[in-house]
Length: 67
Image (cartoon, rainbow, N blue to C red; front, side):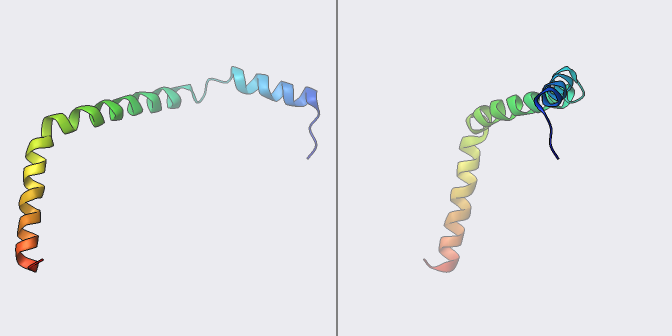
């Protein structure tokens, strides 16, 4: 299918004026911001207790397997 420059320009202007996907983009940015924030805060809050749990699990597995 062949499109000339004027048709492409008209298509670009229509897509630029369309605000249909704007909400989706805003929600995606909001979710990504929350994930980045959670990724930075989560290890600080639960890092110590989680490390202790994983060390205990690792010790039990090592003891059971004799490795």
